[in-house]
Length: 270
Ligand SMILES: NC(=O)c1ccc[n+]([C@@H]2O[C@H](COP(=O)([O-])OP(=O)(O)OC[C@H]3O[C@@H](n4cnc5c(N)ncnc54)[C@H](OP(=O)(O)O)[C@@H]3O)[C@@H](O)[C@H]2O)c1
Image (tube, rainbow, N blue to C red; front, side, top):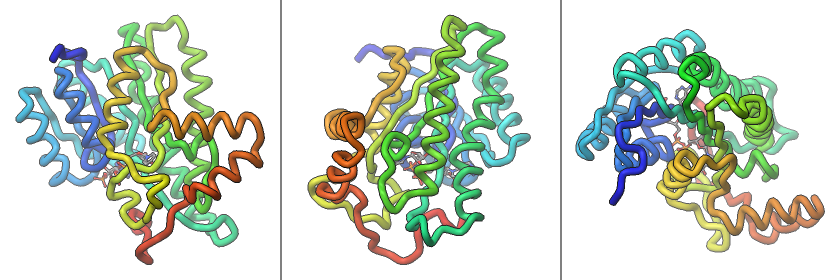
């Protein structure tokens, strides 16, 4: 197989689990060296071992994306440890299911703090470096929840809509700079983040490797936006463009919200 990212240097946030881990492995299979960023060193080290077993360099960097100084230090460590940087994947995030009427302001703030501001810390840490070298790709894991709100995800939806809007503007402003901005919109994927959510057969959880492959495709083909899986997500987006009532109805009949199979939502306590 031809390695399409041979000797590229990539950094992935949230590489200790789920989509970030799958993406780190996919990037390594494509020939990239990878800096792995998250808080859990043990799980990051496991990912690093898997990357190394694919013959690529892996470095592990502990960092909390809600702390701007830690993110800056992580980006510097990635550049120093890999000898440069070509790709940054803003992927780390948390999820919360709660009907909007029951949400507390601190829960909404926490979602914004991790999923939106955490992502921006990464963008502002890596952008000066990419601007100076006149090249680089920033790819972000948004969500279909950033295109069409699905209940009961109001706080998460708000953070992902904010992210989507920011990246839409950023990519237009950076046109001609040599920097490529890509946004990935996954539907529900089978990761620890939504392990407590049961999805019906009509809208099953996908494998996180689908998102990882979309990330690589976006980098290689310079795609601006990719939805995963493509057809059902495009159907929902088209339905929403035609009529919000139609997309609301599609969400109801496909039972896209899923149901909860445990009381404590994953990640809420983190
Ligand atoms: N699963 C889905 O259905 C789905 C669908 C659409 C979009 N997404 C998005 O995909 C991304 C990855 O989610 P996932 O499904 O792979 O979830 P996951 O398996 O729970 O992984 C989340 C990752 O984010 C990291 N993380 C969380 N808070 C962090 C913080 N403050 N600082 C640094 N790292 C942090 C976690 O690492 P540590 O705990 O080690 O820090 C972990 O590696 C998220 O942005 C999520 O919103 C997921």
